[in-house]
Length: 87
Image (cartoon, rainbow, N blue to C red):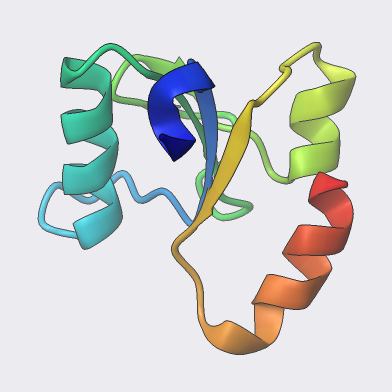
């Protein structure tokens, strides 16, 4: 039910490295009809699986990205700041 109304997912911690779990997840979601916007300050300005990578959720929002959901592939201590940016 959660994903039934979701079309655009911002993936915080998306990796351009093919053998990372976030890369596999992004690819799987794209293959199943979702647009996944990568968020990664280290990879910002590059393209991951055909999508421009932003440094932060705020940067993506300023560029007009309207995510329906945020998927976080980061360590626990950064989740609260990411959640605050998402609201």
